[in-house]
Length: 313
Length: 246
Ligand SMILES: Cc1cc2nc3c(=O)[nH]c(=O)nc-3n(C[C@H](O)[C@H](O)[C@H](O)COP(=O)(O)OP(=O)(O)OC[C@H]3O[C@@H](n4cnc5c(N)ncnc54)[C@H](O)[C@@H]3O)c2cc1C
Ligand SMILES: Nc1ncnc2c1ncn2[C@@H]1O[C@H](COP(=O)(O)O)[C@@H](O)[C@H]1O
Image (cartoon, rainbow over all chains, first blue to last red; front, side):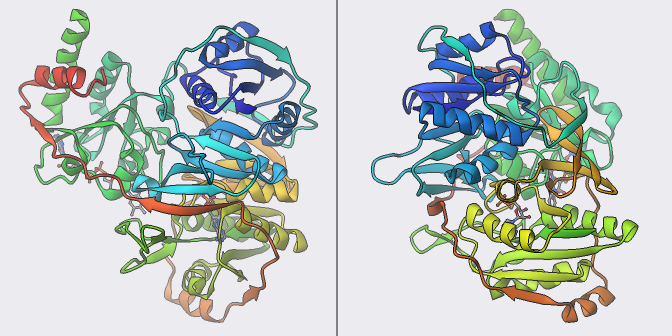
């Protein structure tokens, strides 16, 4: 059996559909989740291949120790040989704990299905996206933490059963005082389309054209490090080696030079568009489409062109 | 307050990434090694700030061979009091974490800090593994850390935002941007580092659960297609028809 952990605290996101689809390609899937999602939301995971969902409404997704106990108990209940996470912030705090608790090898940052003839190996991102590695797992039980946007969700079935599961999660070790999540924004790491800008935009007052374009596209916004450091943009928008690593389908970069540390966070993007006034900007070498021009003119023009395209659709 | 900071060696961020021995090993030729930036800038510096404010001791620990001593001295120059090197190659995150957990358990630290991830393996694994082995709480990707008595208040990244949490010591936290500002070692620090204690400890017998069998570098991108800046309709059409991303 394949056990897939899904975070359902804010409804069922695309990453949940991805991991269930991924699990289904490896075997019969049971999903385990914590928190207060509705049965109707959870049952929908059956469409992506889950045969059942086990939910513990008493466990807190914020508490890594509780979640580790829940997933370990679920794994033993269904005799799971492979446990799958989406490689998000919850996985980063829970999967390593689970690896030690079950003495199960952990593959983090997987970008493809495992190869299982002979050794069990899986391809992962290493060196901040500058290379790929093949990791072999030596243990009977394996844990895979899958990078977002590595697989397309596929509908293959119908709604499945949702059952209450007592994960015997014990006490919380971490007391949550406050959670601040800006309303209505697309979390950067989940976004399929991202519009990003750098120091070439000259000042925070000029971000309106970035936000307008993002709004037309339904994209998230990002920025280069200096822009976050000088406080033009919030830190959670900073991408790169020392910020978030993202792999959207489309990354539009305006006024960003394309330093190697910036590329480290975005080189997993499927398509990169670079807008820059300097023909020598290193970013053009990493781009699929380049626009040699002034972002102050190109961004609004692109926004108009997109609006026209959307209206015609 | 006794703080243990986990330090690892990483290739400089501008290094050319290449592989040798039939793509099974990282090619260290011409590569400059540094202290993993998250470990140095955030974990170590915040530990030093806590010590400066409230007293105590900052010990750094590395699982690695004698070739890691240079980066250990660098971390001592920034201000750590002493260092421990578990004398073994860090074969995987589990092996590394269990060695560190063994040492930490035997020497009762109040706080164990790591970086958010190593920039070569990007696993974000070691810290959580240490915490589970020690059966203590783990705060991942912390961006702020304050301690008062035996209670710590931390801010951490959560999907799309931040969260403020409280834990009691002992605990493990991995440190991300926001925690502290990079410090440049001065001459006095560099001199002092030469004589600070570096204890080399024999490893415990522990299995590795995973291993890297091979590496590859991404295919070179095909040449960029330049679009007339006056003609954004063309770009939109290409993104729709050719790239199929909108
Ligand atoms: C260890 C380390 C880690 C780092 N981590 C990160 C990281 O995580 N993320 C990150 O981004 N950086 C990181 N950096 C910094 C990185 O090296 C670069 O300094 C940074 O990415 C540059 O940001 P920028 O492109 O916005 O600014 P600049 O390098 O100043 O580039 C601005 C660009 O805008 C162009 N431009 C100017 N005017 C216009 C206009 N009107 N229209 C269009 N284009 C215009 C210019 O031609 C130029 O290419 C790191 C550095 C180090 C040493
Ligand atoms: N060999 C090592 N010795 C000591 N600490 C390490 C070692 N490898 C990793 N760490 C610590 O664990 C953190 C996370 O590493 P990783 O799980 O590889 O991303 C790093 O930022 C370091 O603080």
